[in-house]
Image (tube, rainbow, N blue to C red):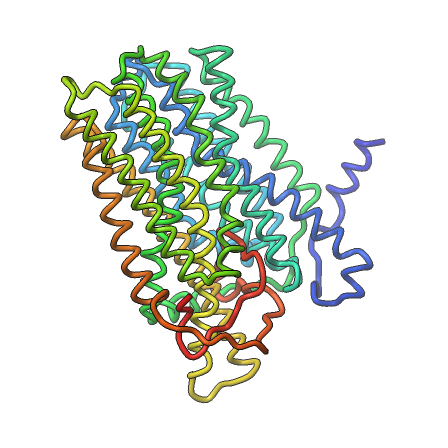
Length: 499
């Protein structure tokens, strides 16, 4: 009976025509259930995509000397995966409009079978494949990073404005948690079978197959989805687009960069404290998942805080806190460097763990608050556009906001590349990460100054009559909100979202 039902669902027409999520009667009469079904499988596919994207953050813990891959090469492998995932975010925003949300979800799940299977091949044959093979496979795992953009764009089209915040928030959060989940499963594998990383790959091969079949059976295509790269090009003409992208390098770039690098930094630190490579890998795996989990869970809080206190203000204080967290890392690293052989004592090890965990949590908050600045920027600009007003101005504002969200998401992920490369250079030149910690701290200072100067120092007059009926319309470039707005956007006049 269950099989016949499944077969019937697979054979049904999966293209929906004239979908209008704002039609309340149609929504209550069945469209809500259709949207929830698509959301569920979108979350599953995106979640697994994030896990595959960060797969080598776990594999690095299994890669002992027998693999012939040293520490600085592991950072390059992580940077490669991050770079490809960041670059694919832009074209992936266009994919659902061109190929259909269901079709692309199936493809994006099935295509990840390739890097997962190849990773298994590399891990069960230590020493037989060189560094180039690992780079190539890591690049293929980057396709999992692109899944986020297509998933968010697709779900945005299914939900009415009044529910976009909830739907996109659930979709984003469910996806991001894929990072700590794969690290937790990796911990379980290390605990049960230290030298068998292929078990983790096998688990995700099955998960990808289930996700692909589920997407094929239960998801749908919408016939009216459109995407235009024009909004993305127009968006780049505004200096705020570049400033927000810089800020997002410091927020999401920190989250994804540290998600890839944290386990490796911990493993090297535990080895410097006197543990064997195997013991250090287990110790690192026991801790590494905590940071990405907190960063994922704190993202919605950033949006809520920004609703209450202002996006500029929350972002500014987030960067101040990230500077303070970096100071903990710098001090701990400096003390460790003063010891013979850069030996790390328990106090410095604790400092590294605390500093990184704080950076994860605060970067999560900042992710939400930075994206809260975006709609107010373009809402303000739309009021000064010559020749358009009313509904046209609103559409322009939403289109520009959606485009910037897509751009910032891609550029921000490139910050994760920089983090891994900076850490690699620091370890290679100095046998410690202290120089990298100084660079991170300096960047957070610069980002904080930018936030203060452009978005937090001006007085704002809030318009008590302005009530946004929903969250950002992810249109134009098909841009997506990594944090998913937590509530209505407050219009600021006459200054750009100063607080």
